[in-house]
Picture: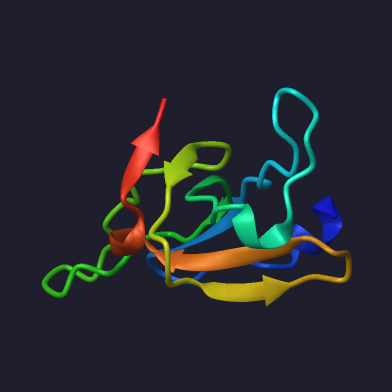
Length: 102
């Protein structure tokens, strides 16, 4: 998958994120049906664009996250990117990212 991700280079202030996997079993081992599994609002940054352009100077405004950072995502939004494998990635604008998790 790493080779496929290297082919995707986000433009401007876009951030490529892989959502965290939803838990399908409880700590006690009970398997949860798909409908009861909540949407995961956390993800890991896979790739980052150079940043939006400053209208006055034309230089790039740096993005506040880097590859490998854990971020809090909105419930809806982002553009789904389907790779060759079963992994789904999402493209978000920097302004759509809610928070950086530590």
